Image (cartoon, rainbow, N blue to C red; front, side, top):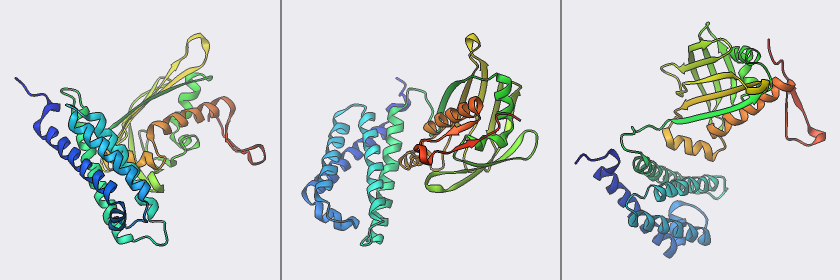
Length: 296
């Protein structure tokens, strides 16, 4: 009988090893939280460490008692990201033992990487390839014609006006452009993109070129909405962040979720096209808006 990709013995062995590790770590955090705190260089948070220990033990038992414990492994990934956040917060303390914290951060990051690998493998359907890409599909209806929205989007220099993470887009030729954006924790990322399909008033498709910091092939479609209600704008992206899926999880932790970013970008595009400005959430006294030309 043919063995399915997701049933490889190595995957099950890795999951069981992570399950036992989770139980062992949980027991240590429950029995000796003060020693664990000293070892990793944080203050004596016994209640917090014991709560983390209970979480680890629950995850370990769940992994060892389930035939395909993908859900429990993803729970470990979420816990790992929380642990990274706690260790990161400890660095800000004036009494931080930075050497020990750095070692603890490296250890947690290493375990997180293993958890991500095991979770991905056990979550895959039969025949599905390994891929850390994030697939994003978002759409919005805008009360403007496809011609207007296409013309505005096709001038890529307009995109930073409603895409908050973008710093600039430099058009280098009819089909190529250079992009600069703010990544997680304010890190700047750059890439070159090339248009691979351009149907006026209907479709713009692109891909990032070799040597770019990120891989972001995608497309935007402009379809006339039923009943003369404007245009349905549909964005589809394939995003491979630096660091793969682990990099994506860390990015989400720091408020840089690509899926949420695209949804917010489209909402701002709607405001720009329909009203010519982007409203902010500030109160009346501090309210400000950015006046933008909806089309050139």
